Length: 241
Image 1 (cartoon, helix red, strand yellow):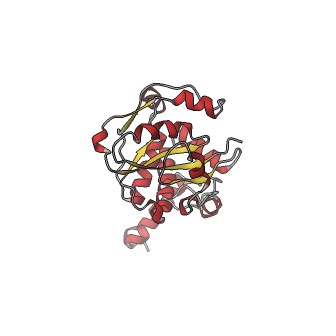
Image 2: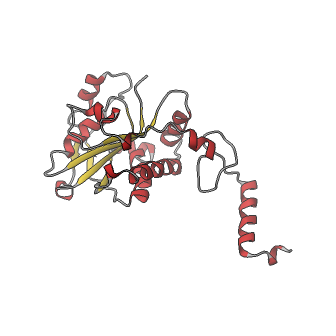
Image 3: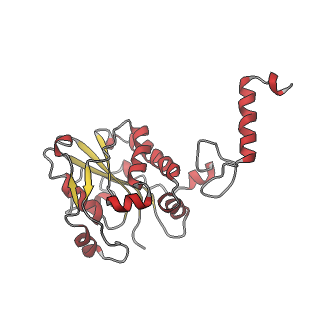
């Protein structure tokens, strides 16, 4: 059968095969080329992601992290984060190698999990934890916003990108303890349009939570708005070890 007489589906498959040979689509986890073109991870890497299942359970470690600090309705993290792991590699690619599509893909996985949980069914909108504008311009994007965009497709919820602003740049939190992290973040966030948030159940989203100081500071600013209920979701949970 000549190329011209190939049925449409056969032509598309041939075209995809030729494109794959010229521009191989590789798994971001292990590098294999046995991966669907619309996925970033092969089935083996996808199944090995360290899921927490926190979204299904109350009093999970993320909710406990904020007890006595922030009156959250629900809180979760999708994956455990450990050093020298595939999750660390994926996070590095996403945050520092401009792999925005990978971030949106991970956000989609996160959104699918939350959409399957009744605990997060009443969410009205997603709020990405804001970066200081100068830092966002330098990086080219806010990783929390990219995650939200992936989540929004799965959850069918709007993303309020400009709802909260970060007023100033802050020093790195890496070497600080919990108290120092809170002092570093106190008063750094402001709600831009309180009327747009009134009476809503909002989901504050970030890429990783360790001590929770940054999310706490941002959450406090959001909870000053009348009638707001707040939940938190992050892609990863790191114990700081």
